[in-house]
Image (cartoon, rainbow, N blue to C red; front, top):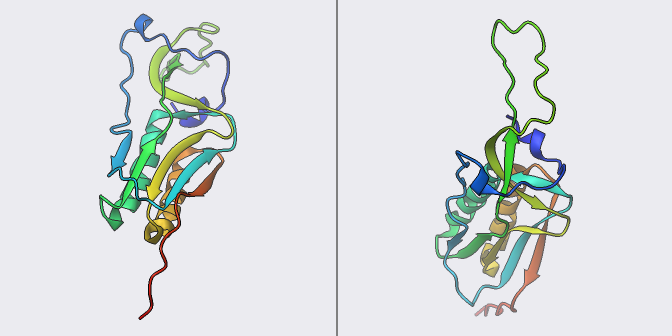
Length: 172
């Protein structure tokens, strides 16, 4: 199963977990990291520019990549959170792929399939990931969001919002 097979949004989302045996487990370990405070200077957001499905392991990879970069400044120097929840169940109708299968297997048309993963459906303008940082860690946050954008598999843009004015440092 490749992630590219599930990027396009086709049909209605399937979210009824009570009818599926062997539900896939969510791979996102934590939705928020760092230390929440009220004195951060900037809010940095990773905003999606196209309509896509983002799988839960891609969201976790983006979160880990960004947090690892941000944590180099210290665990208490930022607060980050994943803003989407992967609740759409992805299914796959597996075909026979053994050495003796010399003909292409047709299989049933539009078969239900087995649950293989979870995905979050996003539309243009949705925020996937956000972080609050101080002014001295702004460049580090931009670099972290560039790493995270590479893991998602869709077009994204980094949006920067200034929360408060940083005090100028005295040069004495």
